[in-house]
Image (tube, rainbow, N blue to C red; front, side, top):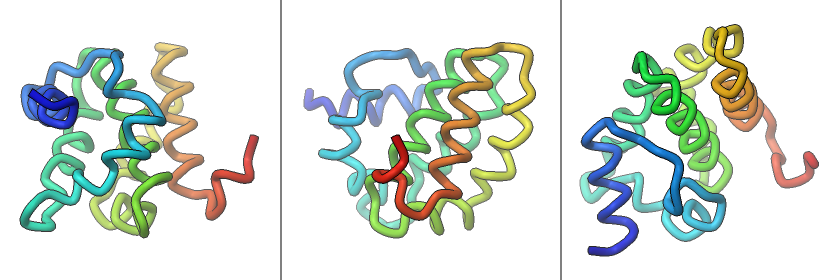
Amino acid sequence: MTRWEVYKNEVESGHLQWGSTHTEAFFKENARMIEGSDGDFHLLKVLIALLSNHDEEVAAVACYDIGEFVRHYPNGRAIAKRLGAKDVVMPLIEHENVELQRHALQCVSKIMVNNWEYVK
C-alpha cells in the first residue's frame, strides 16, 4: 500500500492521527491527488466535514491538512473557500483546546495569505 493509499484510507475512515502523511513533504508530493480521479475534491470535502469532529486531534489534523492543501495545490485557496473550509475553521480559532486553536489559526492564515511561502 502506498503512502497516498494509507492517507486516503485514513481520511475516509475519519480517524486522523498525526503521522508521516501529515507533513509538508507529503503534501508537496501529493496535494494534486486530493483532486480525485473525478475532479470532485471528495477528500477535501471529507476533511472539511472532519473539522466538526468532537475528537480534537482529528479536527487539528484536518486543519493542518487543509492548510497544506491550500499551500501546495494550484488555486487551492479558492477551492477551499468555495467548499466552505474557511467558514468551518474560523470558529475553531476560539476553541478551548490550545493545540486545535493553533492549527485552526494557521489554516485560516494559509487560506487568506496570497504568498504563504514568504511568511516565516
